[in-house]
Length: 414
Image 1: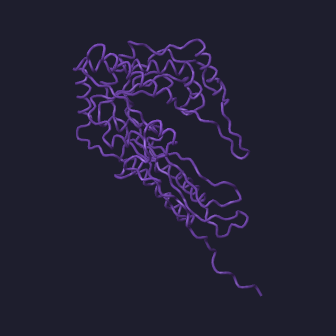
Image 2: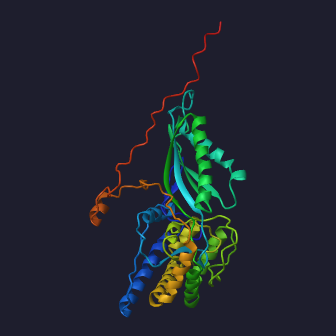
């Protein structure tokens, strides 16, 4: 589609929605990584090499739920090298740092009542909106250029004439390091506490996940870049470019089509100005990591825009994931067949991590946000629910708050 025309449109007179579709092209991400692993495993067998290749599937990557918990559990221990890629609007090797991030939901519990007779009602939505408003006042004096926070009200009530007794607001908070992240996050939490007090509601603070900023590796980026340059950028057809230009036109962006070159490798900026986060970040502090960004959507299209979703399922996305597989596979084979390259990769990693004591930002005993899979899926895969170590069902959050008061009745006026 070259214009925003969802395949699934869910009609609701009060709040229409679209059907499912990932705005970050992660359908290509998993396919490209798996294809690379298959290619490397075939090379290992064909050449009689001594190596093991592993593929790590990550649930909830977009919410940074998977890898931070997996790293804390030791899933990535013992690896010599780790490689990944991400869909993008250009093709380049990547070794910049990223933002550390904390994800949490703040639920405000009150007492429901009718909007036409509101005295004594305690609105959970008041708590959520007060928190949002208070947090906005942090931006000028309490948020550095490297900081970010953003939120969504994910449960704000059902109808305007009913004061909701429960409302939730979900925050992502980002900063350039774990220490700076904690300072900003604590300010957000203070806003939540003050909002609960002001709205006379009860606050339920639910931590979900957190990750460090990523650790770059110059040697790994140079090796990846060398292979990307030798192999060349993804090749797109005339039809691909026509689609890309049409999407760019729809979004009001320059109609330049898809990129035809590899972006030259450049050092990270001298000062970190904030930006994206990745669940690969925690992995990068445990094992030498090399990453690639590969064109799978038109330049100028922001991540999570419908244009990304449209091209991810087209030949544009397919050619991007095939190129990503080639880049990752070639780099992996280099590291397997040339021990000196792997040694240099590790040496830089050891130098960059010297004196740094990595500690997971996830509290001990924290359970990730989980949903029970359908029974037929569990049966087909031979799994049982809940997994070991998981408390299920999760304790319910129910408002038990009493209605408020405006004080004793006034005496009659005589």
